[in-house]
Length: 116
Image (cartoon, rainbow, N blue to C red; front, side, top):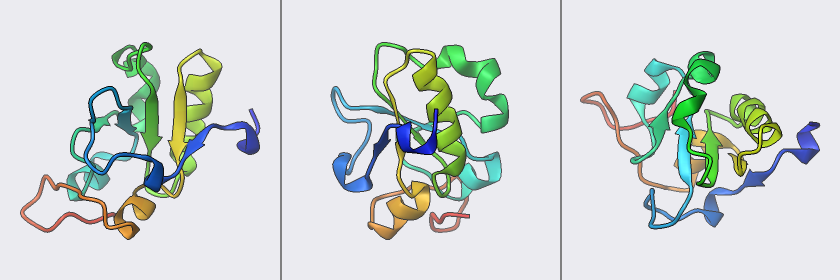
């Protein structure tokens, strides 16, 4: 699947607060330190390196939006999911785009949420 064929979604196309009723499930594939620093409330954290071992945790009956820092790692995961039959889209510009749009984030640390 070429980069032009990977299904995408822009931040502005998603509800501000996720998971919304009937909305997509966000799967964050960043590393644990990136997740801890700041992530989208309601997202599921499956680091890219663990993804194939944990793919059974990704529901097939729901739309999936995959997110990373900038959209590169998540594009690879989205391509894999799409090839395997999931309805998956890659979040354009990833968490950088989410933060730039002023969307809410939470942190696992005492510091304000941020994107590493």
